Image 1 (cartoon, rainbow, N blue to C red):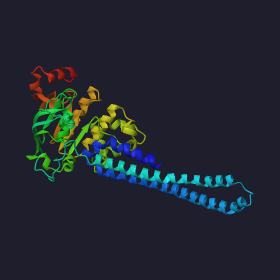
Image 2 (tube, one colour; image 1 turned 180 degrees about the horizontal axis):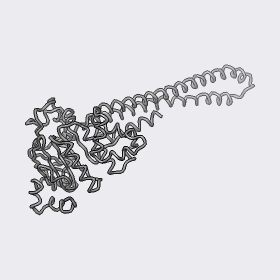
Image 3 (spheres, rainbow, N blue to C red; image 1 turned 30 degrees about the horizontal axis):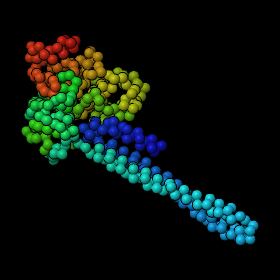
Image 4 (cartoon, rainbow, N blue to C red; image 1 turned 135 degrees about the vertical axis):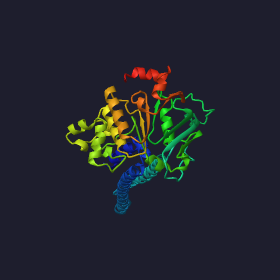
Amino acid sequence: ALRGQFNERLIVFLQGLSDLKVNQRLAEFQKRLYASAREYGMGILKFNALMSLQGAVMTSLAYFGMWFVLWVASPLVYRGALSGLLLAGLGLGMLVSFEAFLLLPQAVQHFIAGKEALSRLTELTTWDGVLSSSLGGSLCEMNRLEIKAEKVCFSYRALEGNFQEHKTDKTGDVREISLTLSEGKRLGIVGPSGSGKTTLINLLLGMFEPQCGHIYLDGKDLRLYDLGWWRSVVASCSQDDYLFQTTIRENLLFLNREPSEEKLWQALEATKLADLVRQLPKGLETSLGDQGRQLSGGERQRLLLARTLLRDAPLYIFDEPTANLDLATATEVIQNIFEWTKQRAVILVSHQAIGFEQVDEILVFAAGAIAQRGTHDQLLQVDGYYAQLWRNSGVR
């Protein structure tokens, strides 16, 4: 039972690790995992100790029995009443009892292996980014939200030691990215898969460190800020975010424990999920199962969006928020999101053009660079990726 509980918590922890780190819940879940690991480890130690004690007792009894046999049978052998071979066989049989001691080395081996595994897990959970040796300062405040990226580059090939001139032969790399976003403004980012959109978001969140260029927050280099604080003031949502194996209520409260019952239902209304939850026998107390398997892809996506909206943050990042939604639902949900996040900074990343007519600037990514930029109306005047995307979207 202890092993099953530990394995379950470990899987949930690792699958949700990215969300836990970004949303500053890592320490809480890490504490739960370590408590389960300690309980499991103590259970193993107690079991092995019991088995070793049992082996020691059996060995002692074997020696006692061997000496008792020798003491009793030696006179019989001397008188010829007992065969010497039989006495030797009895002695060797007693020596076989030494095998009980094999359990003790196994216990030590399991302990060492468990300690090494825990060390590796600790190393994993304390990782803040791929190249984050200089990331993470001490600043924990800003006068105003203004994010500025100046000629930012990042290549995954640098992790393999062959980064050269920021070439983007590998998908996901970015080069020479510049942008500015301030309070009350909305930035849209579109582009095909692998063009670097999500990589840019990870750079803005401090998950990766730019290999060239700089990212500034309120006029100061992002590296001067405490990363935990920075991530705590950003509400981000992607289609790959993790739903935990608990109730709808607990998942909604994952980013913010403060919202009232009314606020929870408002968020569900905004994401067109309230009617579904009301129909469930247990409502908000319904358990979602592993990774939200009780929900369809679209329902899961909308629950993630509702959870993000409940985070009272100056910056909202939505990465593919409508990927699993039909056009009508997606259009209404995006409109509700914009209403909810008025006067906040918003970054909307998508393969679709839904809602982009309402953003202040659109960046069109291609091969890791910005191929086009401008407003919705400006980009429609140019025969490019965005104009084609808009024509094919069905949005009018």
